[in-house]
Length: 181
Image (cartoon, rainbow, N blue to C red; front, side):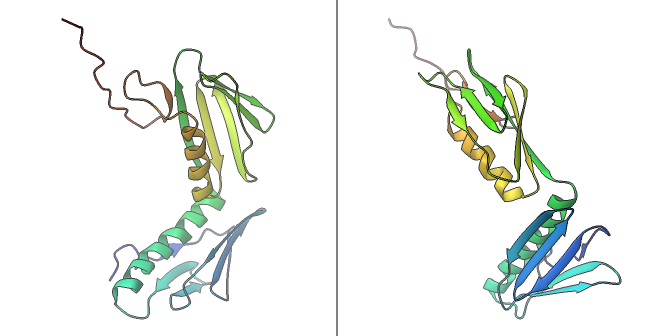
């Protein structure tokens, strides 16, 4: 049995959950997340105890993998609508900076032009200081995709460490050219 999949999920009181036609819908105060579920995976929600369990029909490899996956996806939805998620990016490099202009994010990354980025709906991008960006939202997948998209504009390079990186990321540095003889 999946160690992750068999753990029941406690649904907070102010979060509503709806299961219909293999779609799980989690909502709270205008924040709505949906996840399509494999038809053979069963989602059981006990309204009285507010516990949600994920059950699989058989013990074969496919259902074992889907069991833990769907439990984790539903857990991320519950955390997202109640608390939210955030990713932090750091910009390293002389002259590299970020600036928020309304919803628009403008990045100066050493190119001949500024890089402009408009985040999708449900994602908030804040610039704490010119070298620090915070991406937040209630959809974990979308927050990660937006953070990775912004990082892809100038990923950190291994020689000087310049570029956009996650604050928790370690950039392994390489030695430069050796002096000539």
